[in-house]
Length: 66
Image 1 (tube, rainbow, N blue to C red):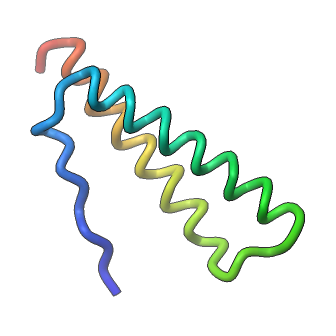
Image 2: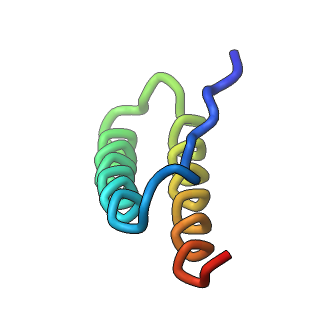
């Protein structure tokens, strides 16, 4: 059950910023719904958090010019 890898290198800074915002909103909704009623797979919260971190890292790499 391997998760597909995100292709972040092909995105520009604006697209990355939009994706980060969308994922942060998704994470917030997931955590709120999990607090009210436990979700089926709580490990998905960790997965989304890590995806956001990967996107932020790639955005920072592009900002620095690497």
